[in-house]
Image (cartoon, rainbow, N blue to C red):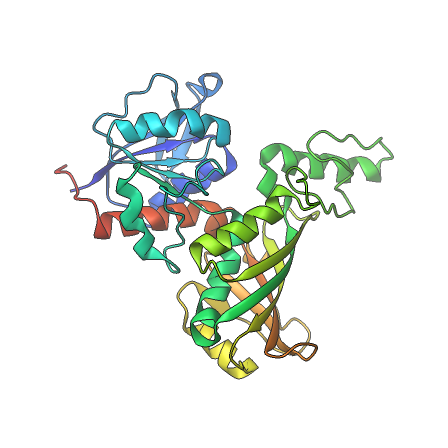
Length: 342
C-alpha cells in the first residue's frame, strides 16, 4: 500500500530537501514524480541513495490519480498550478506564501495545530507556514499552553538559503570577491550581504514593516492564537543555512525559567541546550541537517511582569520548510487519506 506523490519545484533547494526527507523517513510511496519548469525538463534529481528521477514539466502535467503534491515552486507558480492539482483530486501541501492567509486553507505545523488539517477538504490545499514562523510557534506552543502568551517580540537572524540558491551563491561570490578586492556585485540582495546584515526581507509595507515581519504576525495568530500580539524585526545575515531568533514573551501567568525549560523539553521536535557557560547554546551552523528546533539562553526578563527571553535556532530548509511539509503529509495520511493498493 502506498501513495502517488508529486514533488513540484523538485530542482530547488526545498525540493531537493523534500525528496531527501521522503526517502529518509520511508514515506509510503507507490509512485513518485519530480516536476519543475519546462527549462528543467530532463534534468535528474536524487531520491534516496539509489534512485534518480528525471524531471518532468509541471505545465500540462495530469494530476488525476495522484494523491499528494508537495509544492515549492514559488508563489506565482503555485497560484496557477495548485488549484489545478487540487481539482484533479490531488491534495496539495504548498510551501509558498500564496495560500497561507486564505481562510479556507489550513496553515499547519503538525506538532502545534494538527486539528486544522481537517479543513483541507475545502480547497484541497494545505499551506506550509513561513520558515521563521514555524520554528517560533514550535517554541511558543508549550509555553502558551502553560502560561498563556500575551505578547511576543522577536528579532530574526535569517540565513541566505531562505532566498534560494541564487542568494547562497551571492553570499559565496561576494565573500570570495572581497578577499581578492573584486567589486561587490548585488543581484539578489539590496545591499552587500557578505560581512554585513540587512534588516530587510521581502517588500516594505505601508506601516514600515516588511512583508516577512507581517507574515510572522498574521501566521502566528492563525496557527496558535488570534489574541497573541507579535512584533517582529526580520534580518538577513551572512549565514548559509539555519535561522536564529531572539524571542521575548510576556505571559498572562507567572512562568519560571525551570518550568519553561521543562515544558520545552517535553514538546516533540524541540531540544533544549541551555548551559550558562561557554559553548552552552546552539548556533545555526550546528543546526544544519537536524530536524529539531533548538532552544538556548532561557532567562527571565525583569523589565516586564511575567517576561521570558530565549534563543531559538533551526535548519530553515528542513523544519522550516521541507520537513514540515513531509510531516503534514504523514499526518494527513494517518488521519485523513487511505492508501492505494500498490
